[in-house]
Length: 113
Image (tube, rainbow, N blue to C red):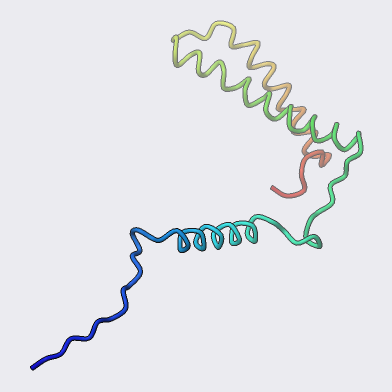
């Protein structure tokens, strides 16, 4: 003759209760906060002078403009099959790429990528 003993009910992982769900959400938020925030001693101070901002702007805008000036005629050629007006875009892209190169050589951009 066998006897049965009832075990305590296991928590249902697919349908957690309200308190279990709150604990999971809270632990997830605590983990995200720890991962996404840096301690105060590790935060790098950025130079906020006007000349530093202008240098970064010059570096970034010249790089983005040269990339766009090379891309727009290529998209026009692929979409419409014609290269009308591509010479001026190419000239602007080369000048902007040269400016980007000079700005990069003078370390106007970030120190590390």
